[in-house]
Image (tube, rainbow, N blue to C red; front, side):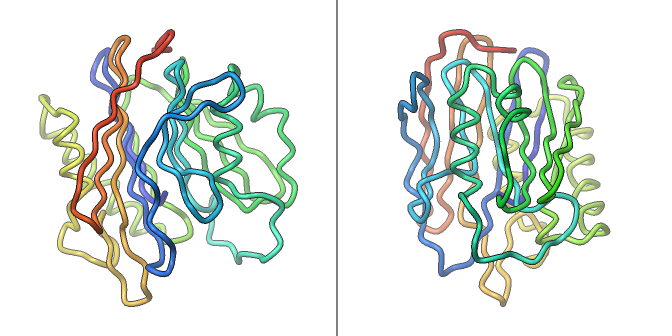
Length: 238
């Protein structure tokens, strides 16, 4: 939940996320389908809070969390609810954007949510105010968590990403997974981190959206395993 990329290839979209956590945190459960309310979702579950950082629903809507909003914040101990549960609420709705607009986020830790439905949206909650930023889904985008990376590091990572996507017109989903699984000779600020503080990249998760097909790919880096889970949709919203 600390690096997210969105790559558009015509009628195909690749949404990929690296989950960086402290080694004291338990490993997530592998992606499984679960019905929340009346909506079927596919997501890896965080065993600590029961939420997730990455989910897709049966309508083809995708949501990915990053820690923090615009700047690094000082965490509190009395947040009302996990951000990962907020994400599940949003993706369980038939109108995710409408729910985000109405949802009360008082006493929720700051976060960034990349939401893809029929449109692409960057949503940020800084602890006091909501920010909605529509984005062009025909373009490629990358985000780095404000809690882990300084502005100059974000710019460097964006430059690496730009060279990757602009230098290869035939990029496929596996190419993107390989890019996200590379430390780029920097275990402090690369896409795979392993810091002396105990922060480490646990996994890389990806959703591929293509016409009426959905595929989630989850690479557990700690156990060196990859799982692919197809997910049928009622109406893929692209």
